[in-house]
Image (tube, rainbow, N blue to C red):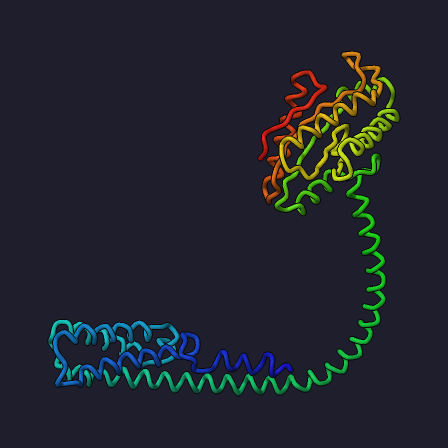
Length: 341
């Protein structure tokens, strides 16, 4: 498996002649260009002055592929051959050298490139042999290692089974904790995180969003104490359930702020829900001894209707929140809505 998966593909990818820059030698490509130029020069019947540009182009391409650092460092013929190509290109452009003479001058650079090709192939062959020899030495190690790995694998399998049972128990506990984390412990309804999650799974649905804030809740707590304030929050959650119906999902966002999300096909349905909520609260007549206007408990309500997409909920929440604060600015005890998004 080691040889089939890693060794042989590595040899094939690195040492094969594929015709790509990493597979075929640059010397081979350079020699091909020189031979094309030589063939054009030797074609006595067809060579004309306009062919000079083609020959010079092939010489320039061959020059660029041959002018690499590794060839300069390892092959003494590289620098003289490049100088000969450079000189020949200039003389061809000036017309000072006959085609046959130019073709003869290309023999030395072609021989140099052939020598580089053969040397590089020898170096590749040596690398392949060294690589294969190293692989054979590793085979013995892998054979004995596989036996050790098998024994260790059995041990780890037993440990894995033990850990799997622990993980299953931990996962069940985590899921239960996550469910609790999505609920408000005081009222039993969803919290802000649950609101975000539930809206995101209601894609392409027209929803109504209502934000509810208890007016002068701090004064209520100061007058009657926090236990009574908690009781009022629970009573308000039950009132929201009664007035908005089973289709509405309720959330406590923190403090005395609530939210409700429900399917809402048009603005008239949203207006009806707001009226129903305010009227239901007035009929319930929850006492508020510290209300500045000597009223029972009142609410400030902001609402909007929106179609769920990836980015619309943030805008819908902001629109409903602005509507709620318009109610507060107008004296509280009422509702307003923002046009549908």
